[in-house]
Picture 1: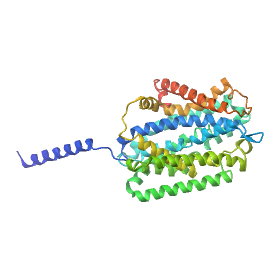
Picture 2: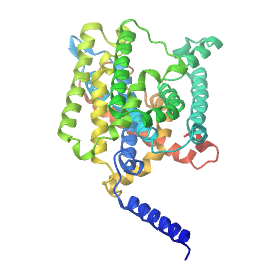
Picture 3: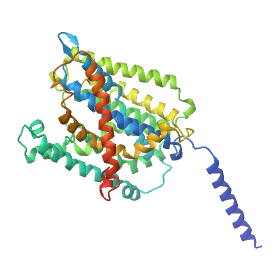
Picture 4: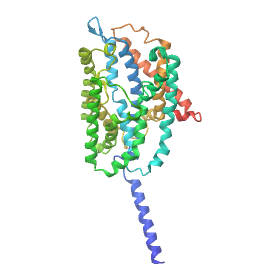
Length: 396
């Protein structure tokens, strides 16, 4: 046998052995195979949490926190629910970051945009038009004082005020456009430096959020919506590089409880000091995703999910089956739930009390879980139907 053929055969043999070894080796933190279980679980939890948050928020905005000089139990329970889900949107960002910023994915910017842009652009365009028409046709009195103008519609688009949940889709769109460049940055920058930059971006986001709240600078701009959340996006991938066995569940639990308590009791403190949403038209500053309590809450929740539902978690059992069925519908649940929730409210009434305060606590205790469950189930069913229809499957 010629010498060159021997070398060629030896090279092929060595290459094949290396491929087999790579297949047999356990997945390392930060690689795609190791993420599938906790990605699905966290996405599903986050989608459910968004719905619960918007159901409970309506009660917070409807009922006065104080009734006859004492705290309304209904308002307090609604605040409890709303405080417990503050991690939801940061979790979406962390999961997207962990999935998209992995430098092991070798693809050009052109390939990246071709594969993924339609996934986010089509839903954004469709649901932006849908909710604009929904407001104009059915909610014009609430949003436009009964007088709809071209200027008002254009302002809603430019300032991302199309509907209260749509802003996150524009945040995600901004991250999609930045991802090819950030992936190169991740590949060529030492990890310790990347972490410092992520923390710096987080700190800048905190300062900007406090400034905006104090000076009522609540305006947004469609092309800059993702910038304040860049710290979250940069940090998400870094969290997946932590060795799973080194994540302490006790510390994560303590961090979650403490940060939740700060958000929850902070809402009472805020009302005492500056008034409620009914008085000021603004939420408690402790709810904001860019402030330390929610940042800590979100990081601890993500790490706990990563630790519990990582690559060694078997993909079986009733819980994982529920997650596998629900996860593909999370986008549909997210974009549909405000519409479904508004329809339910109009059918059953605004919690059946016509905005009258109730202090026995039974209303919030029962109404929030039931309305959340109804909304999620209806959105899920609609989404599954849309996913079976050509072209319409692209909007969910």
